Structure formats: structure tokens, C-alpha cells
Figure 1 (cartoon, rainbow, N blue to C red):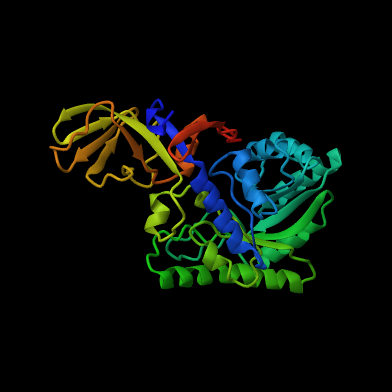
Figure 2: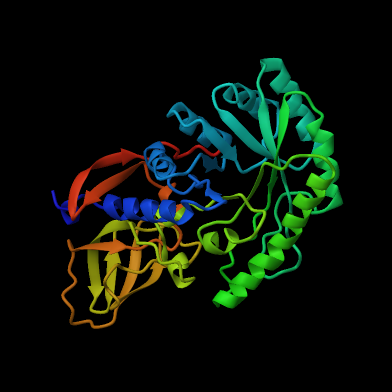
Amino acid sequence: MKVHEYDTPALILDIEAAERNIKRMGEYFRGKKVHLRPHVKVHKSPFLAHKQIAAGAPGITCAKLSEAEVMANSGIDDILIANQIIGPYKIRKLASLAKQCNLRVLVDDIGNARELSKFATGTGSKIGFLIEVNLFRNLEGILDRCGVPPGEPAVELAHKIAGLDGLEFKGLMGYEGSLRKFTTPEARSNAVKEALGPLIETRRMIEKSGLVVEDVSSGGTNSYDLVSRVEGVTEIEAGSYVFMDTSYRKAGIDFEQSLTILTGVVSRPRPEKVIVDAGLKTISADHGLPPIKGREDLECIGLNAEHGHYRLAKPSESTRPGERLEMVPTHVDTTVCLHDNYVIARRGEVEGTLRVEGRGKLQ
């Protein structure tokens, strides 16, 4: 059937556009010292992760342990969990997973590291770790999240953990932030340099102290080109480039829009008002309200749980109940996790469905 004949609402993936995005990003990193370690929290799909690896990525990044389990069970062998894994229950599972694949996690606490060491030695596994460095320096747009301060605190922690059995020091991770508030190329470039300066200096200090820093992980879709030029960074954790959304497009990132929500008009209560059957249970609004693909005359003015409200600029336009429209996500991460399946589209035809294997993997 044609895509616009499919039942609504539905998560539509233009597979050819996604494949072109994957190929383009793979070609960007080909021959560079820095490599891509795509973040699969965006698509939560082993199918798409394998395509990213086939395009040149040596491994992937996951957000959660349960997400990593899904990817490892699909045969992916090189996984970074860009998060701290805390508590005996999770760490026991982590240690078991580390026997199945080359696994790395983030650490910013010696107590957590000792627990990791205990379970790794108990299961006979090796867990690689990166020290997470908090790059927050009161620079607008830079995240103040997890991690130890750069410099001596990170050096000291690296040495303490490197001596623990069952653990292997692999390097550092620091996220420079989304950069969404930096609207010009010059401002974005300066923000990246300022944010990552302490991370690169920390690498230098750790290497001078006698430890080998194998990887320095950073970056994302909004900054992949800038971060890849920073000497000392070895891998970029971009993910959203596969799908894109309006937030990235506003920031000047020009990969193709491959993901939309197919929705149907269910009511035209007034000449200027259009109601569709996709609301907050279908598409997120944490980065703004979703526009309609190819319809600048329709403006989203609100979302309820089950409905989307649009204002029609020209009330005479014939938008009627039953008409199909495509909503463009403003944030793909928080939209994909609302769905069980992708509807795979190729040149306007439905090719099949693809399960979102990592949906609900929040642990």
C-alpha cells in the first residue's frame, strides 16, 4: 500500500533517506583520526545499528544497560554505555554482559568502581571504563550533569580505579552540551573549544602521570564536525543524524529528515481549526510543537494526549477529515520511544514494519 493509506497514527521511516544519512556520516569520518561511535538511544534498533557499523563505525554507544543487552544479543561486540551503572543488581548483569562483548562504562566514583571490580572478578570478566569529566564551567548551554571535575580530581580517580582487578582504564568522556543556544558558526566553534579545553588538558595530565589514554569520547550530531577537529578527541557519539528533527535543522545541521509521524485529520470543527489523531502519546513536544511536512499553512497550536491542534492559515483550504498529514518531530529521541514499530517506507510505498527493539529498555 501507499504510505498515506496506512493506519494512523504511525511512525514512518523513510529507509532510503536514513541510509543516505548513515552513508554520509560514515564517509565524513573515513580516513580521519577520530571515529564515529553512534549513539543508538535515538533509534533503539539493532537493524539500524548494524547499518551504522557497516558504514564504518567500530562500535556503538548506548544510554542504558538494558539497551546494551539488546544490542549485544544482536551480535554487536563493541559497546560503550555512556552512563554510570550503579547498584548490585545492575552491576551483576553488567559483569555478565562483559563476558559476551567488549564493554565499557562511565565511572565518576571510587565506591562504584570497587563494586564494579568485585562483580567483574567474581564472574571472571573485564569491564573497560572511562572517567566521566564534568565540563560545566558556567558556559551557557553546557550541561552540568555527571562526572568529576577536570584536572587533578580526574587524574587521581583514574589512578585509583586503574589498580582495581577486573577493570581496565580506557580513557575519558566529556560532553560539551547540545549547543542549541549558540546560533552562529563562530559562537558554536568557540563554545566547543572552550568546553573541551579542560577535557583535552586532563588527557595530557593523565598521560604525563603514566596511564595510557586510549579514547576520549565526546560530541553529538549538533557538534560532530567541530568536535572532530579538536586534537585529542578520538570518538564522536552522534546519533540523531540518522533521523533528524526540527531542532537540529534550526541549528544548521542539514542531514535529511527521514522520520515523520503519519497522522489523520479527524475533525474540522471551525474553518480555521484542524484536529489530527496524534498527540502527546504519539509525538513529543519537549523541544517545541511539531510542524506538518510540506504544509506551511498549518501551524500547531497545541497537543493533547490523543489529539493535535492546528491552525489553518487559509480557512478556505480543503483540509477534511480523513486526509493524511505527516508531522515532523521536534525531538526524535523522545518520539521514537513512544512507539512499538517503525513503518518502513521506500519511495512512498510501505515496505514493512520494524520493531523498536530497545523500546522500554530504561534500566
